[in-house]
Image 1 (cartoon, rainbow, N blue to C red):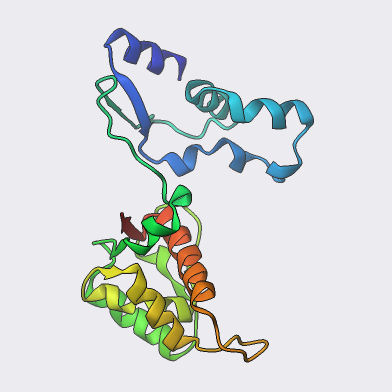
Image 2 (cartoon, one colour; image 1 turned 180 degrees about the vertical axis):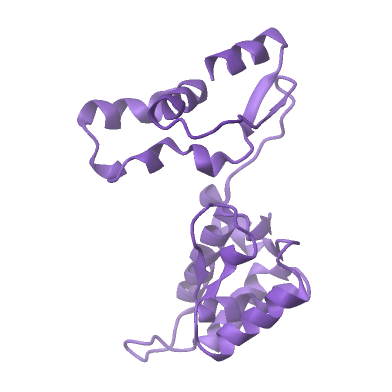
Length: 200
């Protein structure tokens, strides 16, 4: 990793990201990342990307090849992760299904999971994280229109409210804000692994 960054500096290029960045998550190496010794918990968030990747490579050298993205310095576009979006950003959002998932075989199997009230193993069709990812049948049903066209966030929230009009515990009607938050959380989890693409 130090040689990689030295080469980038020498070539006047800027490191953007690892291609498979989820496989380089330093915190995933710890069983209890929220319960680290104080000196690690205080220092790890502040170390540079280069040091973070180097530390990962020293602790867990599993990558034979180092695939990364780079570009010319200071030519990147500003980007706000969806975890930092405002309510207004979310209300204007459009959600797309990943193109590799938008195929008849996936749609057929998701329909089967929905009708049988079974979780849908989405990672079987797009294995990006190396771990099994399941989608609840209710969430899968909410996302079903994405097979036909991209959907606005308000339309997905409306669909969720029709699918789940009442709280399953209290049987009280679900408020629009609660439905909005539920759909938002589901989309954030799916977007994190690239299963859906959320456009602001």
